[in-house]
Length: 456
Image (cartoon, rainbow, N blue to C red; front, side, top):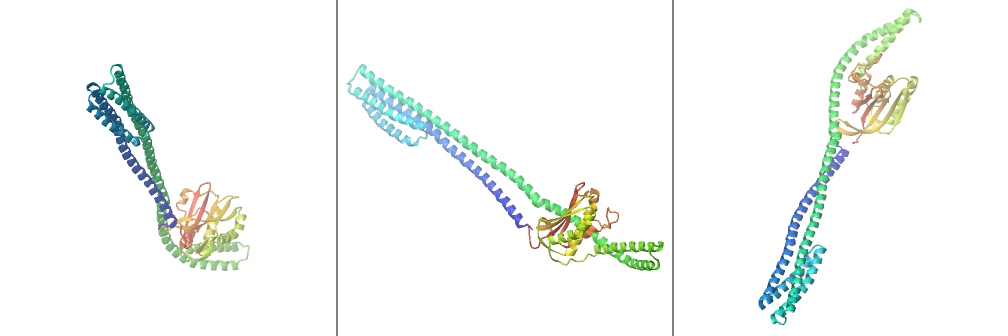
């Protein structure tokens, strides 16, 4: 079951991924659109570049040919054609002004317009004099020379117009290349961001969803194996404890009679006292075995974790100080849980006593409560963690494998039932008992309890 917080994070990741995908698609579409525009404009620019200059130069040459007929053949119809074509070229020049894109092209066209007027005036003077034969000799040569100079100026301006078109094309290509470089950069950046975000998203999903499930699966398998082992051991232990209690009762009664028969200080009385003490120790072991085999069901009630830790701290502080240990208390939360106060106190006392046996002289033990998030029963839930931390020697790797096995202990007088019994109590509360340890640094045990009606 996915919690609200996790759904929000996944939704944020998906939104960011969609945003990056949108950026990538936009960059690709913009690139294609820009390339199509460039291709179209490049074709138009090339056509304009050659069409304008070539058309103008051809028209000027055609007009020059007509004037040659006027000069050589004195053909009046050629002059009429010259004037008609000249007027058409004049109008064509005016029509090209709005289509030009650069200042240089427009400047050259203005020069063409101005020189073309001089060209027509020179042609008019030469044609008038030739058709009427009012000038001959030197004057006629001057008319021809003036017309040729104006014609040459127009031809040069035609070449200048072609150069201006080429310059415009170069500027257009440079700007287009810059635009394409920017679009390519955006596309590559979007791809890089998409790749980075994809790896980041995969890592986050693995860390937040897959890895906890793997850890939970391993823990569930370990808990299942431990439960099966504890169940079989519990049945065996309950039967053995039941059979032992009868003989122990008879032995204790006989020891009591022996104590009454002999006076204090005699060897027989000391032997009877020793037997009575060992029988009492065996009774405590049998009681622990029965508690482990048949733990009582917790009587659930609302418990403030702060009060729970404070009670345990008050109960054990004097004993810890007597042993030369410092028992500290840190309360980071005043959360309320559902549980059996006596059973939870028993679990905490077991953990504190184990920590006391693990630390050396002048060691410290810290009890604290904090809120957090943990995977419990297949979902991420809000929890409160009751921690018991020490600065002892830590737990050796070979011991960790059997840490929760019943009757396994590294202490000379222990029964090995403290941690298994505490683990059973926590499991009956819907939580789990976890720990972290480092050899030579210390160990932290944590009682993880779900907060009522809360999700992470």
